[in-house]
Length: 256
Image 1 (cartoon, one colour):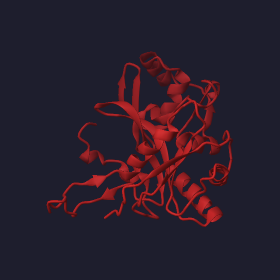
Image 2 (tube, helix red, strand yellow):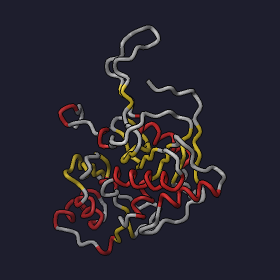
Image 3 (cartoon, rainbow, N blue to C red):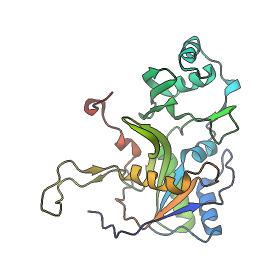
Image 4 (cartoon, helix red, strand yellow):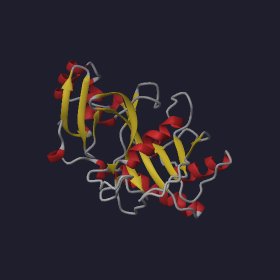
């Protein structure tokens, strides 16, 4: 059982510079946190937006460098999106889940179901380039965590996040697409509620909840706050769990 004491801090790291290919994100996060007098502490959860991870890993593509296929051009006519963007979406996807008007929902190669395979134009270059999701966000989180731990001597967890829409609900929220050092699901099955009732189905997507909580300080598009520290939450540690644990098997999916 989690021994949460009811007090959590969410600290935005405001001094992150513009990220370039091959930048050392772990060191940048560590130094930026120190510069604002909120150094990394034991037990911190470091929440990092996908955008800066993709930039550091070179997952930036100029649309003019893409040659769209005939099929991409036909989908472009349906959606109204550039055929070059469609070509990238198709290349990052296992399958098309929904194609309705301007909406192109796909299953990415990672197994995430989201709009446009997670490809995004915002905060890249003004619209002529896009970022793709990291090739393996769990490995990205693992690399950042181990780097921060080696530099600080502190034990931390790392969550890489992206913004997804939600079936049956309006609005967008940040969710975990990569984790390291934390089990993304808090399994409370078998525990008892305050009346002694044994919980049978209670599995909390804790990594998603933490990602959304961090968005409260990360989510302002006009501010350079792509990283947050969540402090005070006693999370379920795991050195092996991965964000893909959050993907519901197709056999259990009620909507797709």
